[in-house]
Figure 1 (tube, rainbow, N blue to C red):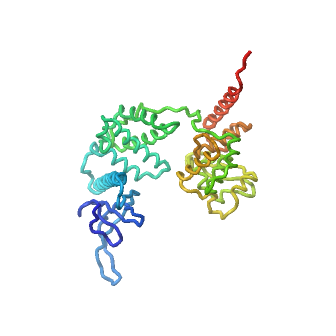
Figure 2: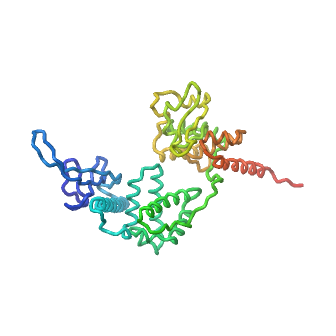
Length: 401
């Protein structure tokens, strides 16, 4: 990639002419990548230099896109990645320019019907701030893969108008999701996709919602993830792993005994622990701000207090790496323990609920410990217990009379 007019700070213009606003810029990083950002020109303001000279200063503002290019791509995959990433960045630059034009002049160069679907989606992701941003980005990637897999839709994989997204396309996409993924994942991804489509309809980018009447149904009272029995929990705890991260081990064991989600355990600080009353107090990230049951109080026994330890109030109890790294370590650990199940971090929460119900806890107590606002969310664990009982009976030798 040719670099023109490299600035002293390691930045250069990638796309944009003298009158374009914004311009797509690149910043060369020390790790061999190029960080992409948009540079907006906001006009001139009067300023005074250190020597007292009055001059007109160009005001600019940058928007970091969190998109990166390989400075010197070596493989076909890296070159293709650069092309795809640059195409995304250019689409975002174009849409930002249209937004500025609409704000300042009251019109866009193109009509709403001619807005590119993928461009609008990319801009939606760039502006999105909620915790499910990763899923919204992922389902777009899967949607493009789906389009590319169908000869009739391949031409839409790069560019398409919002109103070219049809109901038949959505029916095929839901079938594709269900063939690609297991458990609740198809439903989860499609729900995020529908969120973006609804936003397009609300913004008059799309005239009609093609997702209406097209759904992926799941049994919300059915537990689709594996759970660890009490015996398997003991086996896992007793299994050492070479060069393991002790914080991952401590955090997962804590979740097995308290039912926390990964997003909650990773944010716990020692300020959440009331040592005098031996309780853990925290607010669930998932329901914070929109549920009366978002606050959770969990009693702590000697074992859990020992697992927590002590530290400064604002220090993390479990300083964990990324979710991906935690899952990788967890899979290695369960394999080493001889547990032939697909165990994710969320399985700890399901295992906790199933095991304490099996040991006689009533469903209301379990619901409170999990932070459920409705007992219906907890009832699925009773069905797991019933299936385990049935499996135990069926495991006995056949009765012959």
